[in-house]
Image (cartoon, rainbow, N blue to C red):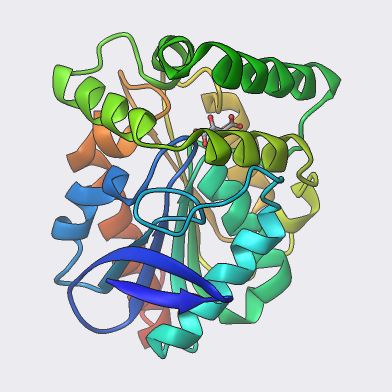
Length: 271
Ligand code: MLT
């Protein structure tokens, strides 16, 4: 599906009907990260997996930094386009940075939030320098080198050949301008730790036990800082849980959405 969002052509994948769940991918990925979850959750929600600006089938960008606030504003306009006053929102890694920016700027539109393999803190000086190094490497030497770096940090050691194939496809079809724009946007993003304590909606935090970018300890601290936070740690997998452990992620999101619906109905909390 395609729509003009904030004056740009946005591509997204859609399954199911009813209340809208928006899925936001990480870097350097696209909406196909969520193919399994699109199918698995379509009986519960109208599931919409977006291609962020410059990613997948969405309109190209120039390479100037993509601010997380701008990407969040795209989601706000997408919700308008979909006719959804409120949305369930799930973001992985960079998608989580966008989801936290959305929560801060457009929190009144949230029905629930899921933060997968992500963190609330901003980049320190070392992380900023490594963004610049990665940008130089990608643009200077090509995506093959970037791919090798990313494969090592994004996937757990036991990742299946299917997960590896899916990651390679996503990395290889992401334009250099997008790689650059996302790296600058992530480098310059704000610390959003303060947002966690103000989240007023049911929020799920998910990570993989082998995730070195968003480790279990970070996920636990986030979940504890969120008033209605739940934590799921998926054993044996790394950073890209939706493709490394598709069923476990779908199950975690399903339980979360069922809980959200229970809260809406006023059911007593589970013991
Ligand atoms: C991602 O998966 O979106 C990125 O690895 C996030 C990051 O580099 O901070």
